[in-house]
Length: 208
Image (tube, rainbow, N blue to C red):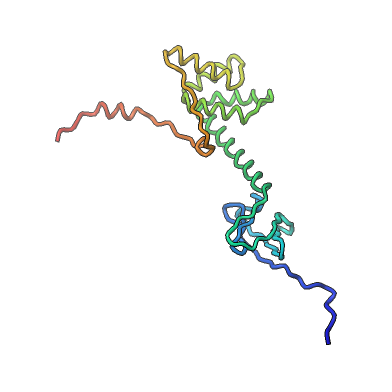
């Protein structure tokens, strides 16, 4: 004799705790699903249903994806990636500001004044970093100081001072080389002290 089905439906959710690694993804059934970057290096709970994957942390759902039954595919929520890109952009900007102010102390006053006047700080830092790479710390320090003294705030006045000082020394101002690859643009090449070559030049040649 057949019996009636129970009033409470059978739960079909597969629960599994997984560890989020260094990147904002969890792996379930060989597939990778994105999570918000704040949960990197933490343990979350995967709630796998026939047609969707939900990911929970601290009692709240932090991500939801359509379940994939393929193998070794990556399922992403564009919002997770956009948030991560924004965090990385801010981190690069912070690192760039630190490098700039350490190499060129006069920049601190310029950035303070630029902030008070509502200028775009990220754009200003990037342009001053470009000038630092082109002209070096000593020349940029002199140019920024001149611009500060004249209360002319911005990368344009600094560039004009740099070019004027360069021409006064009988040199042609350098021009930036456009780089289309964003990863290559973010590479910082440390300037080396060339005095070592002068020392080598003065050393006596050894005879065999």
